[in-house]
Length: 461
Ligand code: ADP
Image 1: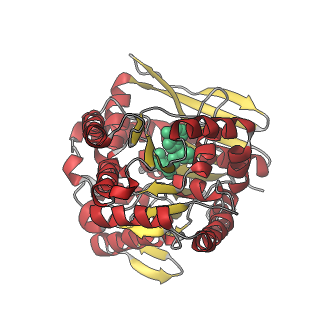
Image 2: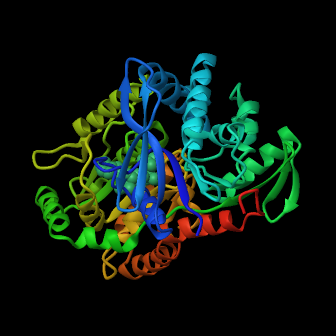
């Protein structure tokens, strides 16, 4: 079997704390193929430019780690990736900054990393590149002389062309993307957006079966919805530490119903609208006051960026206002915890929550929605309230689907979740759990790699 080479901004190299589902899935993909190479940023920055890679081996996986200079970190990571591409892909042109210098640094890092990876490749390797940090990596590998297959998976949304074209450099990005052979997206909607963009702006022709002729190349665009490992979440939710932490929360809740949100603190997650919806629920349903508590877990992320600092202040203000309106001697309606928790704890809390609130304004997939479903007690499951703009909504249609901008309707969906009869909860949960189990993380990576292996041959075969 061909050796697999993965490139992603961050890796699961020994010592990394990112033990999330994706990291585990990619590590298993490398192991399954009898070993392979994983390239990425080491997580370290230096004042000066450093050029090489550090190789670490664990089992049959080799990790190749490259450092960034402070200038590269600022321009490539904070700058173009997270101040331009992230907001535009999440439909927030209003928050995007377009800076030519940041783009040039992004392009330079893609070029430097492309050269480093190329030096490590062997004939016949399969290369799988991940996410928006590396739009130009395929092109740089081609420039360095690589003719073998390259797959790309886009983890975040691909927006409508009318939005993507706001990026002043979108032509250069498109030309770079066309150097991948297989492009994977989270949803049919993202795949359609990308295809329409290539057809309308770059004259691509449909060749059938998701294949497109564009820039003198044949590429394939398909949806591969990412999943979780449901058995792992069940094990976490029922583990001793998962149950202990859920019990600690139960003591605080007394016998009140729990509404739970778990997110990275990000403006794409719809946190302000969600808190407003909970406030509106209390405004409209007097009988619920004192009987339901909303716990929102949201550790700050990308704190170097102004939009994120501002969001944090607004969240503090809004939850403080609702709490001061409604709190009583023995009840605080909103508990907002700006920190991360171990995965066992999260799974224990998911299982405890009568309503799981997953209401992003836009999200590539949203794994919290799937984790919430997997963690439920089949005999007494909670209700998922899910944004129609989360990629997960394409598979989880048995959730209560809401428009996260429509505050009163979201409040009513929370109410419906809190009062839903057991039989309906069970029926909905069974359907949701089937979708989560069928589309798990193992299927995602196997489907992608099978499609990459099946892609019409390149010079490597
Ligand atoms: P994103 O990738 O945008 O952060 P996802 O919902 O797709 O959103 O994935 C988030 C992952 O991070 C999930 O596996 C989830 O369990 C984990 N996570 C989210 N919030 C927290 C938190 N507060 N503490 C610890 N882990 C978290």
